[in-house]
Image 1: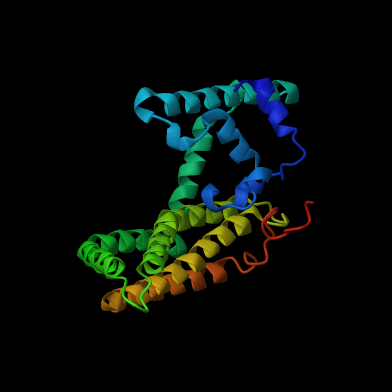
Image 2: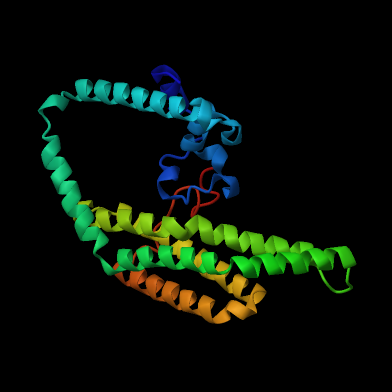
Length: 263
């Protein structure tokens, strides 16, 4: 994609400005991809991601091209605004960013979210045999067609729970890091705050993960104690996040929390 094509794409009035800033990046489950420029851009540049062959360099070439176009547009913008990019102190900016990252990652919310990542990985590693055993039981139920049993629905629910947990496993931490970074960068009177938007995505991820783990607990009662430990950890993380970002829940995400206002 070249610059002119990208500019033309951006002029589409159907797109909701900035909708991609506060989503969970789960395009396959998103009801408003047709209003998202980021989704359209990826479709235009990469097509169906399942058809991409990374080994042939298709994906890398596409990403490289996007970086090139972005650099060209940034240079145009700087020239138009009279900004001398060569005069910017990039080292100072990098040092400041590292300081922010160190501060952010030491915050209790981020440390707790990072611990959750490890907890999930360890749990799934330890539950492999349980999943294999359950798969065998569901296969047997399907073959026997036992009355009162619905192994296909049960398997679908279990798969959905696993997908939700895995999707948000790392994203909660990423969004909390972004939210905490935003608290150091948001203007003093900026409303709504970008940091609250990122924190809201983290909270949504926590809410959905809690629901998925609760569903998992129903399917795997033999692992209830382990799952309860994770649920307690997530609930505490949710409480800390809500305390740190008291306005996050009220943040209105364009295209998601104001359905019907964009026609």
